[in-house]
Image 1 (spheres, helix red, strand yellow):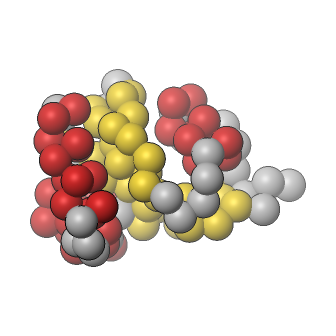
Image 2 (cartoon, one colour):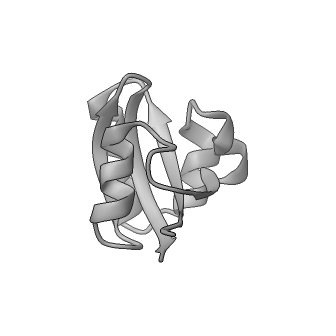
Image 3 (cartoon, helix red, strand yellow):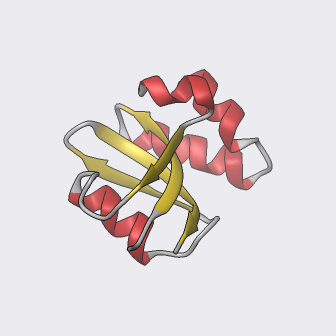
Amino acid sequence: MTVASARHILVKTEQQAQDLKDQITKGADFGEVAKKFSDCPSGKQGGDLGEFRPGQMVKPFDDVVFKESVLDVHGPVKTQFGYHLIQTIYRN
């Protein structure tokens, strides 16, 4: 059974997500950015969502976690919750 672990940052606008991604690309720590800016309660844990299986998250989120490269920061990804930056920690 496929399982993944990911962390994310959730914000209201695509521009804010892109600005935060730029900060991370330039060396800012993903977890610290999540703690400071994420609108999701997971932000308190650096955006950590723990382990989950395909179908447990909304489809656009799932598609990134289960199809895109591991450890890279992907996004902005739009869902009904807002805009996400997503980093898959591992997937098996």
